[in-house]
Length: 174
Image 1 (cartoon, helix red, strand yellow):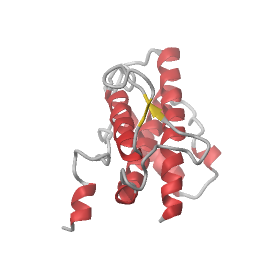
Image 2 (cartoon, one colour):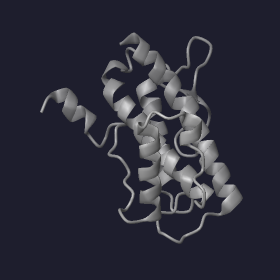
Image 3 (cartoon, helix red, strand yellow):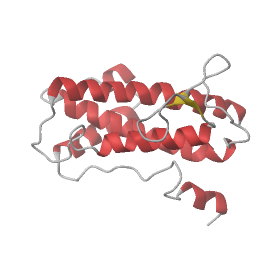
């Protein structure tokens, strides 16, 4: 296996294995339905509409996890081109610079190289997705409806804004 390929599958890197849904569960069936609609070339608006009779929170959770997996795959393929030397700041173009803040190490917004920012971001998102209170995986376990739905929506918005801006710029450079 090539060195670059080994780095892509290194668990210490940003790229992580996909989170899978348990076969036979309702969420697995929702995931299959989402994949089929997205792969069929249909209108995206129609593809993400809530199927009749399905729980809105489950549907949103499936799409958040799927989006996270797709961002991981994209970033995993381009991360060798975005190093601390080539991407010294996490930015969304010349007008926007993203700074990292958390409750652990970075108490104040801190400018970081893009690879370090992306590692922290993907770690944080993975913790949110693996939190059973936000994304329950047990069939029959309900969501705390409004608060959790808001968290999922905000997580998707956060993923979309933070992840794709730097990925898009790096993709243009390749």
